[in-house]
Image (cartoon, rainbow, N blue to C red; front, top):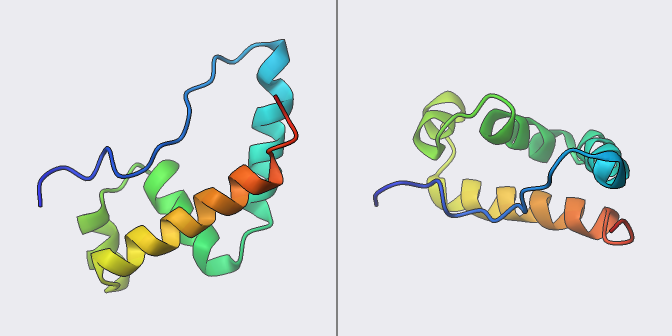
Length: 84
């Protein structure tokens, strides 16, 4: 077990004019996720809940949460891969 903070790798981007398009793209991609993926993504990255807290909230196994969060992250990456 231990901390779940390093399970997901989302690049850290400085907020400047060059990356504004990336942030916009990421926000649009999150909005277009399947409702379930959007909800768990927001719980993890907007509300900063841990996997344990999300597990308790939804009663979803941590294994499935990791798989489903990674799917959401990959969809966002794919939708914004053209933005650099």
